[in-house]
Length: 358
Image (cartoon, rainbow, N blue to C red; front, side, top):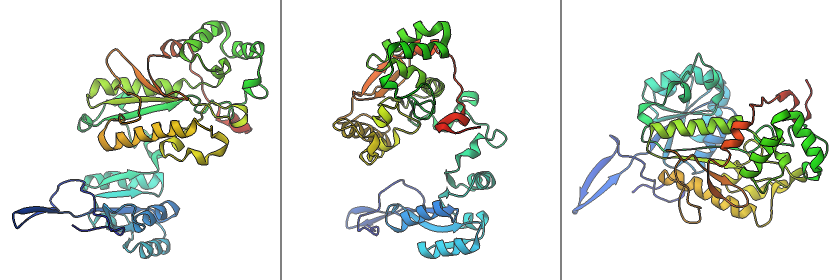
């Protein structure tokens, strides 16, 4: 069997017309060919992908070509990677890549997506802003339903407790939230929620008995609602498994900060220890083992369950299950349903985030 640059055999990904079955001495061996990869974009991000391939991280692929707007940069990057420089997408598609990794721009996605897919080439998109354009992409599943070909595909989805409303980014109150008196917290909550404050506090304490009621001010509800709606509709469409999560682990940063948008990512990639302001001795390592382990299991098998992972049952039916990642990782069922019903939608004023001014 052929090997990659690290001396290890190429992984077997799929059986296709490029594979040859050979018989020798009563034994059958599969001689595999690698998937062809093209890169659209010869800038910084394109260089990261090309270098990853050159350094042996993508040995299941053969990099066949790179296309970019700058002829000079494209030629230099292609020479560095040892592949063909292409003048445009058409020339790249002529190499018949199985995949094109887009690392160029929103405009590049719009210009090549239909052409590539029509040619039978799958695309990996980094400039996902293209899909916010309804004239280009009108496939939001909550509005248009799911594609039939995805019925057997499991899904892992979720959100983060604070998202863009976290107390570091959102200028509410004075000083650290964990130093506020109960009277001051109540005053701020009444300003935000008015007559509904008492019921919201009661529902919050049921959902999160170990958290500070000040966190209500920094709690995202919009992305949480959207994640639940997506999971619910997906579970009705597919029996392949939908796994919903909510990352709620507070950081010690700035006297105590609820998790912000993408706060779970260092835990997914198991490098949270490098985010020193958020590191919690004895907690961070344990939580990242569970989070990263669940993601790896899901990538391998389509289920996050495995050794060391709390039992994570799929979403669906009458039970809206959510894996809550916190100091204690646990599976909850509709734990925040009442709270979400009581809390009004809150729009994020991005002009005020991080202390910026209009």
